[in-house]
Amino acid sequence: MNGAESLVRTLVAGGVDVCFANPGTSEMHFVAALDRVEGMRCVLGLFEGVVTGAADGYFRMKGSPASTLLHLGPGLANGLANLHNAKKANSGIVNIVGEHAVYHIGYDAPLASDVEGLARPMSGWVRTSPDARSVAADGAAAIAAARGAPPQIATLILPADAGWNDADGIAQVPTPGKRDGYSAEAVDNAARVLHGGAAQALLLVTGSALTERGLALLAQIAGKTGCAVLGQIYNPRTARGGGRFAIERIPYAIEQALATLKDFKHIVLVEANDPVAFFAYPGKPSLLKAQGCKTHRMTTAADDTIAALEALAAAVGSRPQDRRQRQLLEITKPTGALTHASIAQALAVAIPENAIVVDESITTGRGFFPPTAAAPPHDWLQNMGGSIGFSMPVATGAAIACPDRKVICLVGDGSAMYTLQSLWTQAREGLDVVTIVFANRMYQILRGELDRVGVGKPAHRALDMLRLDRPHLDFVEMAKGMGVPGRAVSNVDDLNKALAQALAEPGPRLIEVQM
Image 1: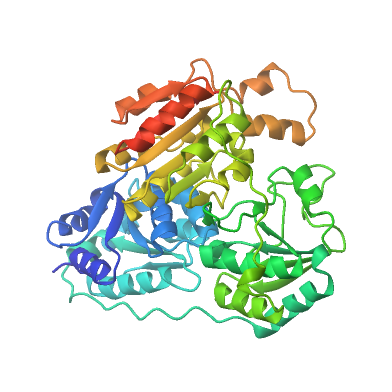
Image 2: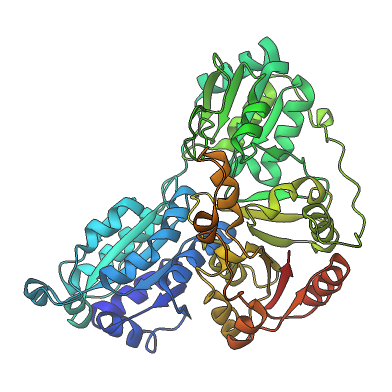
């Protein structure tokens, strides 16, 4: 076999059996190997940002990495924005990036670039295979890196001649190392903080703390001690609904975030980072916690957070019967005009059991959490890195990972235009994704930011940089052109009907909510 086939066989043998791909000439031997190797599902994306975002969504729901196939440095560069988001979410991905044949690199062909230099900022592991006989072992090492503790993005660069020359065979993936335990000292310190003044203490959590088991332990600890529990502004995956412990997040808007955190004297970090504003604003602090508030690191993403929470629950003397649940909003089917509140209620009523919600509704969706906490059990995925064009690719990958679950994608019209090609892949693969586009006719998030940075009242030319008009974007027609049925709604009664119909039917659907 050649190097490309040895790599495909190594990937499949190592449990990486999905490849999100946008290949070019240098990757043709990898593409050809797919005909000779059983077990690899290859999913075509029409833009590399769809490919990398789909791999992120796949990992978040499957818990094991998929691979990508990207064309040289420019192809990798097109996918970097969603690799940035994946890195912030600690998603494991095996990137396969083509490169010119080794002997061709020195001629500075038009597509020649520093592929390793492009890969490093978004990758935890980078390697270029020097020859075909190294490819399988390098592929196995990439899989092991992607499955690390914490998981990471592993980028393997494959020169064309390393793909077509003869190889020795496949390589065995090293046994994954166990996730670290936890620091008993850090847990004891957290227990002392809660014992010493839980009313002024916050458990700030993310990652595995937001699984169903993690939330149950947090409910137990909070019920016993009276401490507060909040998620980060954004989180990779949160188990919600169906009687699960419903927690709020730190608000995105800096004024609200500062108000939320102002009374806490201690913050215990459970995989979370020190609370920091998304951006700098004139005259406002970067850190969101109050002056004098102390932070205490209990776990990182490399630790066994569930074991640490079990130890903390025991240290504070809590039991399952101590679990508390805050009062949830009553959800009723809304009627009348489209408002942020009525849309939130419509979603809360419509979310089916075991759904996956992928949320990039930055402005419209700020009030979605309270009502949807009372929906049936579901998972909620958010954009950890802030690079837009996240949700539609991540929804695509989540649907590949969980074909038995309905995926709901929430996205603004400006963000949707970055990776709209996701709809084509969803149609081609017959994926159960309902995409809801909030047609603000404007980069609505930036309209608010323009006020927040204190530049004064904007005039025509400034506002023109934010408006999405001349012409209006017709998402129903664009979806139709990519094989996805769609409809537009302009009141909440029609939204209720559109949601019910789209969620009852198999395959991808789109709803344009005309705000």
